[in-house]
Length: 635
Image (cartoon, rainbow, N blue to C red; front, top):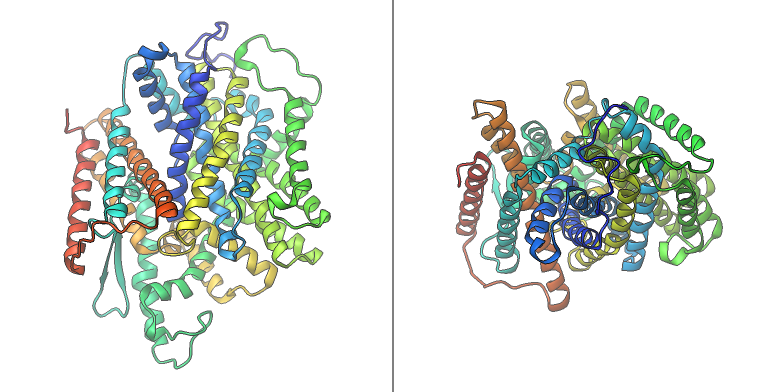
């Protein structure tokens, strides 16, 4: 689209790539990335931080303008670009790395940070040759929703608007709420109610701000599909298993020591539903990738064509808005990443045999290039939050595991190697989708791509170890796979690798879950959110559904489209703040627990029923306040 005119003039040189912008972006990235990692470890999904970061950048730079001077829209965009890399790193790490802890490898911080760094750098580099096609030539075709919205936020702020208040209010409330429940322990965080008649059926609610914010961001339809999957598990399948299992005098596999009649609802979920849910999620992820095959094919053709076209010397571009990092940087950077995988066995933890490391590096190069191109295009249509990263990771793990089986590498080193490949590819594909949104925002604003790409590389390099530290710390304080930190995506990846390499997968339960996901697809229901609902505890899905209901109510009680859009934005920004506030305090509490022991709170001894009533009452107040903020019934 050659006649597009950006917000700033391409011929004018702006003071944008500044020390202030980069440092602010690094700090924003560590904060929001750590919060996203905490959220992902609890519920298996993360959110895009492009819009909240753009707003926070505007607010902080205005606040600091008496000290550092005024800023322009492109400087604010560099800060947001630098910070946004962290959320993608968080997604890649929490989807895979906790499996190493569950296996007992206990990877050191250096290993986790190195994996994040290599994947982040690889994703940014592979995206560079695709920019001119996906962002420039396809400008009128691929909307890149988060990138376009972030650009409009910065433009509105530059014209005098300000929307940051909802983010900061949400952040403060989310942080205070989490501090009261996790540190002071003023009331219980979760509610559980046994249902009559249905044997061992149970409803639950994790009464917290983050999941409420997630539900508002996802909206009613997706949150309703997710809670439907949870209801199927907890008031459908669990009662059936409890009813038919009651007469068995011996344990039913995969449980080995406990009778179903002696199990709690959570134990039935852990021993049986988890495998059904894993099958549903794996099937839904693969279906999502299959649906994307035409896009994948076109994207790969584009990627190969652009790489061939750019193999010669870079030609100087006439205007700054068309300056990418040179292809020499791309090739050298990719080569360094591959050599890093090959020559550092102890850092990456993929075994001491050179041949294993070489094959692992080749798998990373092939799958990363394939899924970076796919991810960059898919997010242009559906956005970062709907990017099927987990499905791409499952395909990567299946492909790598099958290669390892053929070569006879099925021991612990083989498991770690397969997961390492999946980690790097997952991070690379995730961050490629992120930088695509950033480059779209930059294209609308008139930013210099070379500077944005450099900012993203800096953001990935600096936040890699910050996010890794948050995940490592949470892993040391809480047990991954436990009710405190379920790490559902990593548990799923672990199941996939074990099933292929060791051949001990509970195929009956897994295929039953796949059948449920297939049924959802045949009914026209998106199978991935439905499968996630089956896989996760119902208590996790309930506040998500409440958030979706609130958004539906708030947006449908208006009379004009403009008012609806305004309410949507207010609620999403407030919800993003709730997520960030709870996530940040969650990491801080984990740090306190690591050094001083788990907080004991104020030792308030509520009865079970009174404690749950108080917890529900506070959560209802939070719901009312969310409605209040989103509706704009405040000055």
